[in-house]
Structures are given as C-alpha cells and as structure tokens.
Image (cartoon, rainbow, N blue to C red; front, top):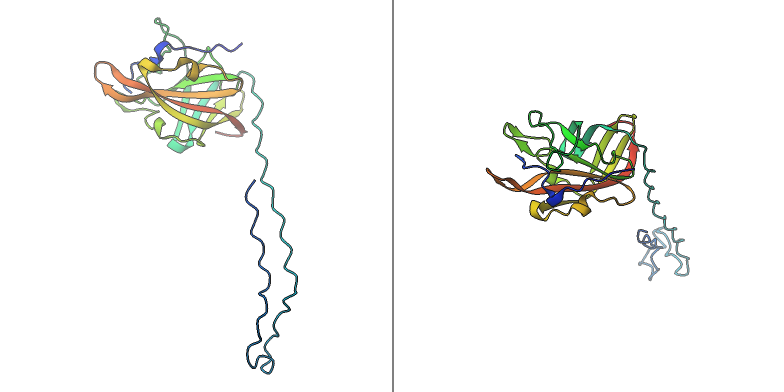
Length: 226
C-alpha cells in the first residue's frame, strides 16, 4: 500500500534555497506550341498533353506512440539524474519531522537529494516525492536550476533493483507556500508519477523563500543505465 504525504500548507522547509498528405507529385508540363526549329534541331518533341500524371504516393501513417511501461515493484532509489540541467545526485531517505513536515536533505551536503521513504518509490504506482535544496549558506545546491526545466525533459532514477525509471516532465509550477496545493502535488493519479521540489520565489533572510517550485513528471520508459 502506497502512503502519500500531505504537507500542510506546502511548507516542507524554510529553504536557503497523422501528418498532412504529401503534395501531389508534379506531372510533366502540358505541351504548348513547339518552339520554332525544334524538330529540325533534334530537340525533343513536345510531350503529349494526354499523358497520364504520375501516381500519387501513399501517405505514410504516423508511428504509434510507445505505451508507457507497467508500474514497477517497490525498490528504493539510488541516484537521480536530470540531463537537461546536468544533475546526477545520490539519493538519501527522508521522513517526517516533529511538526509533521517533510524533512530536508542534509545542508552540509548540498549535492544530495532526498526521497520521502514512506511514499511510493520512483516507478512504483503512486506519486514519488524527491526534494533538494536550491542553495545553502555555502552556495548553490543541487536543484538551483530546477525551474528551468520544460515539458519533454526527462528525469532518470536508478533503483536498487538495477532498473532505471525514466520520467518525462509534464509541467513546472511555482506555488506560494501559503497556497501550496497539497492534493495536486502529492495525490495519487493511478500511474507512476514523480515530483521534484525545491524552494523558489523571493528570499527573505528571516523567513526564507516564499514559494516552492514543483516539477510534475510521469513514467514513460525504462533504461539500461542512468
């Protein structure tokens, strides 16, 4: 049974951070009057205007979309990679803190991402949640450029069972922490999905970032390597 975390208010940390038919093939030009002296010069005779046009080529049907893979069994994630923003990061397990909020990855290792271990594993039916810092007091962190992702980008997750789950980004959204849509972000959809989260919006030295950036993605493929 997959348990989905609902993070009240969205404050999970005070961050430091079928193509058109091809055109009809052109047939030979219709004959007009022969040019003066054409026959005498050995030039080709004008083509018969009753000549049949060439057969119209058949349209090539579009390729059928590849169906997504079946949901995978449970297996913890080991490494997460996002090629579009040059990320390859180890994954650590996260739980819930004393206030009922999702814990954060260690700030002393800003290149690590955290996976909510009580929820779905990446590739399993359900919504897997992975979070990472945008920055820390020591500088930029692993999810600094998360908001630059676009639909169609991919996220790869290597799992302990040797499988690599490939997710395709559907959308990227920024939500004010006070208006964070818990159900939309964390709710199950009936298929394997992945959420990547980090901080975003304006930064306040006392309150931290005002918003969260969320990447929505779903399982589309399996790969041999990360």
